[in-house]
Image (cartoon, rainbow, N blue to C red; front, side):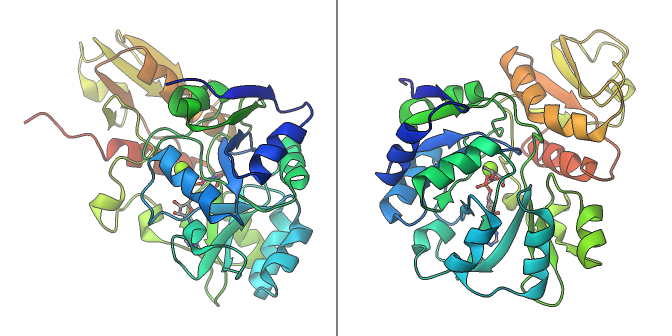
Length: 327
Ligand code: TXA
Ligand code: MG
C-alpha cells in the first residue's frame, strides 16, 4: 500500500502547508479525531479526499478554519444562534451549518447549498490551517464506514500512501467526532451527537431537537449500515452475563467500567473510574485494538446515556447495525 510521510505535529508545518496549498492531502490531529485535509477552495483537491476515503460523493465534508474570526470573511452574516454558538464554543468540538459561500466549490458540500464548518480546539491543527492560508476541508481520516482514527498510526494503517503527509500529534483528546448543529432557523437541530454534550448546547441557546437519525433510532436502516464499524462483527448487550457461561471464548468484550466475569479472549475497559469523557476518548482506540487481535466477535455494553455518553452509545449502535445474526 506504500506509506505517507509522517511528521511531528509540533514541528515546522511549512512543508505540510505547502502540500495543502498545492492540492495534496494532509492528515492532521484535532481534539476530536484525525482529519484528512485538503484545500477547501480547490475542487480537485477535495475530489482527492473522496477518492482516498472511497467516500460516496453525496456525503459532504466539514470545512475547518484556523480562527472564529475567519468565519465572517468567508461566509458573511450568520443567524444570531450560529453567532452565539461560534462565540461560545469555538475553538471546540462543535460543527455549525451555514450557507455555502460562492468560493467553496459544490463538491465540498456534495452539492448542498449549506456548508458544515468548525474551528478545531487543537494548537497544531490551527497552526497548519493558518500556515496554509486557506480553509481546509477535512472528514475523519479513515476509509468510509470504518473506525475513526484517534492516533496517527490508525491513519497510516487505514489510508497508507493515499495521503501525502500525516502529522503525528499523539492520541486525540476527545476521541469522538464533533457535535453537528443546524442553528440557521428558529429551532436548532442536532444533526450528529458528538463530543460537545447536548446539555452544554442547551445551556447556551435553550432547547434543541436531536434529529432521530442521530440518536440511534435509524430513519432508514441503510443510513446506519457500515458506519464507524470495526471489521469484526460487533454486538451490543446489556451486561456480559447475557452472553452465557462460555460466551467469552474467542470473543472480545468492550466494558464501560467493570471487567466482565467469565473468560474472554480480550477485554477493553473504557474507564475504570466510570468517567464518560475518558470513555469517549478511549472508544475508537479500544475498538481498533479489539479489531486487531483477531476475535470472532466484539461484545460491547452501552455506557450511561448522558453527556458525551450519548455520542458514545450512538457510535456503538451504528457499529452494531452492521452485525447480522447467523441464520
Ligand atoms: O470532529 C469532526 O467533526 C471530524 C474532525 C476531522 O473535524 N470530522 C468529521 O468529518 O467527523 P466526517 O466527514 O467524518 O463527518 C462529516 C459529516 C458528514 O457525514 C455529514 O453527516 C455532516 O458532517 N455534514 C457535512 N456537511 C453538511 C451539511 N452541509 N449539512 C448537513 N450535514 C453535513
Ligand atoms: Mg467520519
